[in-house]
View 1 (cartoon, rainbow, N blue to C red):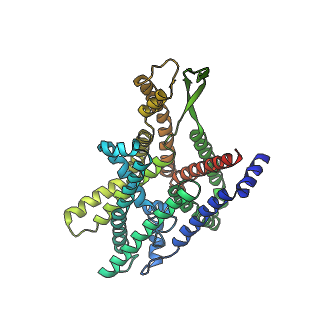
View 2: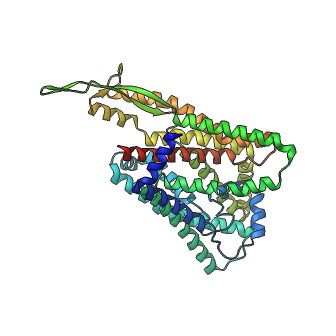
View 3: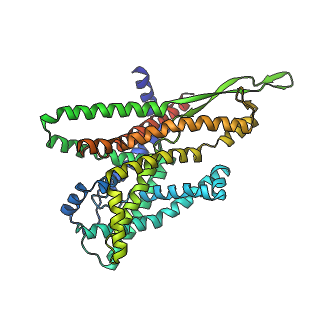
Length: 423
């Protein structure tokens, strides 16, 4: 406790760290203020009933921080930016030039790669915004719009999404933590007071065992996320001795830490975006005047609306994206090359290709555990809902996983900043 209070005092005593924290809080306050500014022409009663009876849009509304249910100027949240990032990451598999830019060209290459992702955000925001407007109009939640009003709303929605993307990047640069993750975190947390209020309003003493069970499950999930996030497999590394003049360098032993969940919470966000985007397009095409397109859309929507199909697809996407993101961000060949350049080696393993294969084998096994854990946590609320019929925790697992992971990452970054100031 004394150590915690000491670090807390260091945080507020350090001028630079204090500015970073206040900047982050100020940016999140701006985000919440923007989420409360609605676009005119909305029937809020029909809009509320639409979201209360739609699990798909309910989940999307959670990630937008309630902006979608208010039809605010930032109703899309950071979804277009995340979708653009996913597309750019997928293109690295098909394009060696993009992969080299992301992994080998250093900071300048990654900056250019990120810029292309930002440019891709604009057309994606236009497509998603147009789809949402047409879907809400078909449900009677949005009044009919003239062409000029439609264009105006689309420009406002797109500008809001780009503004939110910019705020997220400002947080990453001038604040603490990953800006996009913190915006999603703030959106999820902002729904807690409303959920608690609804729970108290509908409180039933007969449901006390259920509430206790929810608390136990939540505690188990939190403990599991912390354990998996913090767990790592140390690979011993030895530096060869080098004689320079009359001095001997190297000869020390250390280790290379490989985390079980190397990808963090990114696979969950990627999988959610991949599942949400096609459903949104299909719902828009469902209202097409063309009979064939309309019938195909209804069939596809019926398949996607099947809870078991959705759960299996969600699990597989989380599993695949865990391996994919780990492969993109952690290159065993590059690690092997860096070890060899610095005169380091893994005891019992030949330098070069053998070292790379050794690291890749261990990483594959570790990622299997992390991918299975993330997949199970993601689909667990869906399984519980199908077995018990209770809808109260339909998005609980994903939201809780994101919140806990972001909090752990934020604490680590604050702790790292404090350690730098101490030294």
